[in-house]
Image 1 (cartoon, rainbow, N blue to C red):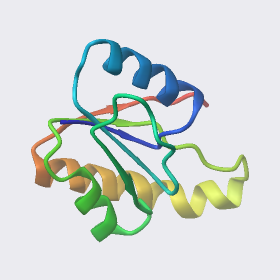
Image 2 (cartoon, rainbow, N blue to C red):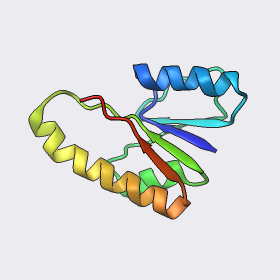
Image 3 (cartoon, rainbow, N blue to C red):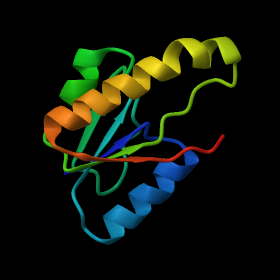
Length: 104
């Protein structure tokens, strides 16, 4: 299973199109993931919560981390280390490869 974590943004939407066109099973993960044609699953999760991140990524072989945060220094300082740490731990537990897309 391929998981798109942080689904709903510009990069995630393009990735959805590619995976759907290839008939590859994929899961959308986000705070409020939008439904998408071809998605095997949609999972609501707060990646700042370790247990939710682990649960959302379970069973994945590849995880695309595409999370976007408000462009606010305070938000990034508080949230980003936790989100990254939780996602890395979730991928370790799932035995998944992590692909991180950074656009900043």
